[in-house]
Image 1 (cartoon, rainbow, N blue to C red):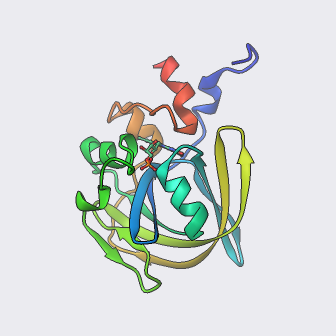
Image 2: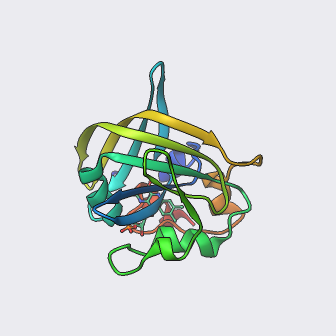
Length: 175
Ligand SMILES: Cc1cc2nc3c(=O)[nH]c(=O)nc-3n(C[C@H](O)[C@H](O)[C@H](O)COP(=O)(O)O)c2cc1C
């Protein structure tokens, strides 16, 4: 990393913690993501950034549709570990969680989820190690009341690490 970049400065940027799920040819998979944000209000568009090597990325490029489960602050680290440290190529994550199928046929993880947001991909941009998916929101539902898990709390209170493929993995060095 260039000497002029202090990673602690980037660590002051706020995010939530989410599970982004999709399905292609009957293969359901999902992963933890913090690199997600709303971009516009009318129509509502969002952005999600996924590592090129992730199984979710592979499926999402084909399905071009996803659901996003917004995780609550009581989400256990063990649960985050299933979706954030394991790869769906060698482990069936949907066998290890509760989920529903939305009206449009997307799997939506409901464990520890405050809300679900469904997006249809408009564009995919290559960003070095990752792919940036810009999507239009097609459905959004509140599942229960509660406080969302903040990415900063995941690190400071839950003492969670960033796996290698998270955009924020560079921050592990400052812990
Ligand atoms: C707190 C946290 C945040 C993460 N954020 C991202 C992210 O924004 N983008 C990404 O591609 N991976 C992120 N990851 C890593 C993926 O969730 C992880 O590589 C996952 O195992 C990929 O699963 P898959 O191969 O089944 O798709 C994050 C993981 C954690 C624990």
